[in-house]
Length: 86
View 1 (tube, rainbow, N blue to C red):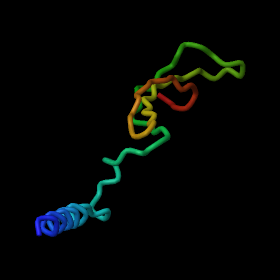
View 2 (cartoon, one colour; view 1 turned 30 degrees about the vertical axis):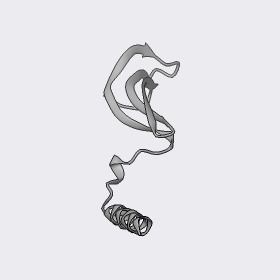
View 3 (cartoon, one colour; view 1 turned 60 degrees about the vertical axis):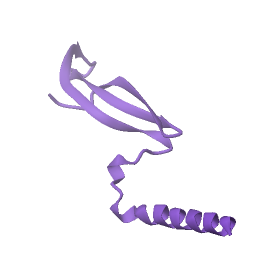
View 4 (cartoon, rainbow, N blue to C red; view 1 turned 180 degrees about the vertical axis):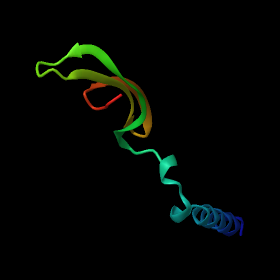
C-alpha cells in the first residue's frame, strides 16, 4: 500500500512540474543556447587616427561577445574595424 501511495505522489508531482513549464510563455531572450556565441553589447565608435591606402579614415568599435559551451557563458571583448561611422 505504501508503494502505491509513493508512486501516486511521484506521478502527481511530476505532472504538476511538467504542467508548470509552458514554452509559449518562455522568454526567448532569457534562454541560453547550448553552444555558440552572441553579441551582447557594442561600445562607442571612434576614429583610430590611421588612414587607409585609399584615404579613408579607420574606425574602431568595441564589441562584447558571450560564447556558450554547455550553457555556460564566457564573456569577451574584441575590436572591430571599419564597421561603423562615428
